[in-house]
Length: 328
Image 1 (cartoon, one colour):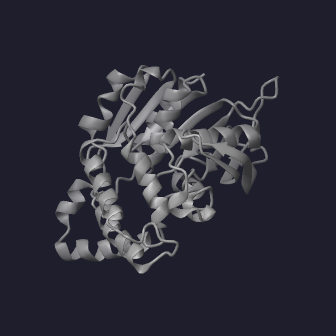
Image 2 (cartoon, helix red, strand yellow):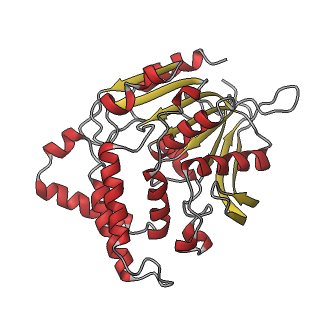
Image 3 (cartoon, rainbow, N blue to C red):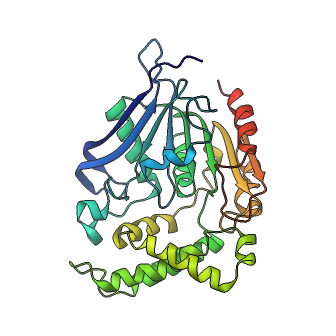
């Protein structure tokens, strides 16, 4: 196959003014992004093949690297056929966030819808895109995808979501509420200095987050000593997360619930999950969606005993091909 020229664009774009749902406004807002592929246009000059990817809790624009099995030359999502846009979300480092703006605890409170509007405004101002071909997301990024499809149902041809849910409840609510309580215990949170106590808080929070890192079967197979070693590695990596970025992100998660809005979704929907996920369970977060969303399909696969590996499993190939063949 002969490929057309693949365009690669990595940069930071500045939005002159962004208004939050709360009415708060920030000026000169940074958006870190990567775009890669071959843009195609209709007769009116509108891009027709843009796909936006919304990254998970600890990722950013570079999450493109995690999708190497399905995105690239000769893959299901071929660079010759699609134009991918990966933008670091509102509230994350290197895009507009409490740490980058140095506003810390004074940063405007934001919602998942704010994160969606942040990307919508970026697409309009940077690429003149008001409607995309598709939106994909995983984990927390899936929250954005569901919200986008519920609030703006005419702005995409399809959505694909893996390892995610449409609301924060049950086990997820307990975990997020515990993390919120840990943050509220610190007298230094509202200080102008980033203290050691804030870093120690992130240690406790990362230990809680670790409880979702492996599959149920893997946790049962590991000895306590093995859990301790891997937990320490996970906690060390998490120390690079800014406590203010984390706090505002967690606040948005606590308020996330789209159950009453799922009926608004009009587009084609593919939802992928595993039989072994401790955080997003098939019986509560995935299978009910086939009855709650029209034109939706839920695909469950048997995961390995290690990570959830949504992007690694071969079932994705066949299901994606079938799903995309029905997208006009």
